[in-house]
Length: 297
Image 1 (cartoon, rainbow, N blue to C red):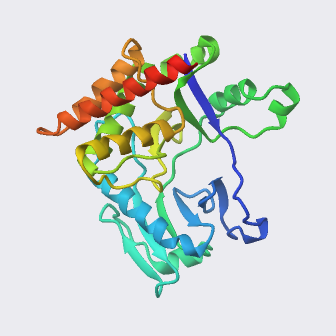
Image 2: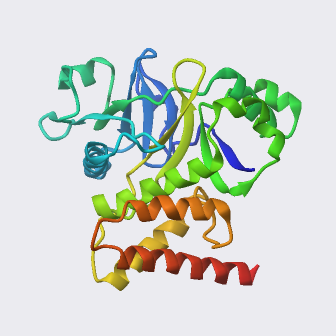
């Protein structure tokens, strides 16, 4: 069975605890931004660590909003709905998504304690407790650590990692077949490449909860995506670089691998008419690169 990796709290770099937003609860953090919820509400706020990064966050919001607006509902993976970007250094600049159907204002961002530029989006629910507990026990080496560790809120879906097949057998009826997960990843990547025009660099595929007893599959984190530019060869090189730079979500591109074949099918299905040449060149290029890596191991 391929890997399901826990989403653990991460360091916020040089940001001090005293600098964290007041009145908000941190649900995730990286080197670029902190994601916070307010009083268990249905929204989260992605807040830059440093105000100099506001334009980078605005670019992420723009890409996220474009993806959500163009995104087919039938896809395996959902995209959290972006709601609005709030920039505090530009006369309290507020840009609302056309996907929002309720009132959201700059005063609201201020009232919940957002201290720097941020954008709001729908929250991905945490995993059901029973699944979270299995992950907690499996991923901590000593039982004392497992007992004291918090439940994982999300799980990264690493299809190029291998775990014991028995790990999630008792949840089989609530989880999705891995071939469907792999095909869904291909759908997302093909859509972002050829319908949206971005390289999908560093996006994350995660499993979360549905707010009840089930799970959902989501794609998140768009701040490193770059627009596709250049000739066909340059675009392929850019896409190959981004593919292998990502965490190991995608099945390794070995033609004999059944998960990769499912991924490939989902990817090709999203290639627009007249764009079949470069997408196929990309798939061939990642297969060649994987063969080179295998030969070195």
